[in-house]
Length: 538
Image (cartoon, rainbow, N blue to C red):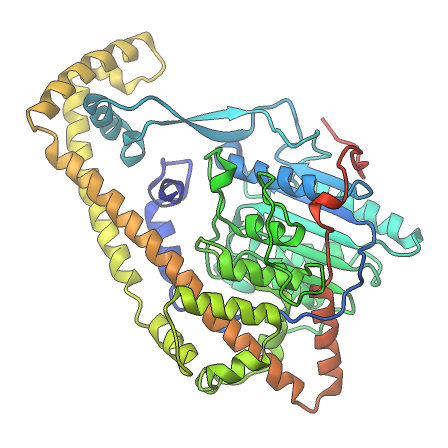
């Protein structure tokens, strides 16, 4: 599992972010997200959802970053939709015949000489037996357009026109999967990365598109890219957190807060091993995971259905990744309830638990158990521990391990290319012959112990990354716990306030978040394909 995160930390130059940039992002995530805490409260959604209009937007910004897991998300969510859904899928460049999806395969076990050659020529990634390939999209049907601003603008134009004439209004689901980028000048306006060079969809740009729809169209937004929590600002006019609330039924669920990366963008093809927000949220919502297995336990209030708020709490409790999910009601509370953290975390756990909904209570208990927390002060203990994290030290050690490996690698590569210059020209017959000769020599040298320092440095980097990823998964659950606890406290205090209008607006938001968005996956047969909304463009 860690190797997927490796692509984002020490991946190939030109394909993934540079090491220092990614490490800086990871370091910046420590302790900076305590002010934005998720919650959800079960309301009274309708017993049966109306037919949906669905817009699924997916892909990375280019083939090198369009990992197969993103394509899998598009296919998985599309498969869960009832047959009466009206669905539009925008993916990559919109061409179903072009090989734009990146995936990896396991090659045969590398010999010692092959491993050393891979390390010397390609770095840490070259020491693995995986190979990267590209193939055509497999979405369960052709895409209806490209993942570009022009195509999304056309979709919203048609939605706006059709919904203006429709009665009753059909609810709209917007699902985005792929990559996200932080706005370094304003984290409240982060962006979803669309297909093409520097083409992005910011919070405020998406707010503009949604504002084109009639105000009585219910909208649900689910976004699973890095830094996606900023899109909770869709609650406010123009996507501006300082602006008034929109006069619209809108609910949103996001894989992580605006300061952190999210899990899920891997070229690995085994979907059974995927650990990300999409996998847990939709499995809880529909009772079927991405490989068709039944999932139970998310109907926390026992009413026979799973609302989005319950699916959200299921993800908080069970997502075994670095995700720290948030929802729109989280953003609402942070805007309008300004209690200090020291006051919030001084509340005894038993009182917090009593104020929680059944779904929140289940998540709090599950997270407490995972973190080995007990006692009335467990929220305060978790909160204080967050400021004592040693992740910065682990990151510093990881940098040093990587630097040592690179120094040894560059020295060895210089010697190797001096003997076999053709190794600098991959894809040629001369390169293949040089590889065979080099592997034979390196195999002998490994047996003699010559490359022991290089191999030891590579193994140390592996262990360091495994340890860091394990620590980040624990940290993510600790953040979820303290954030959820704070959310419960702030929601209680809002309900005790004298601002009737604000309380009513909050309850409307909770009702939107508590809807049963999708029926259980086994209640319909997917033999009838949903009609598309926009014709596909070549």
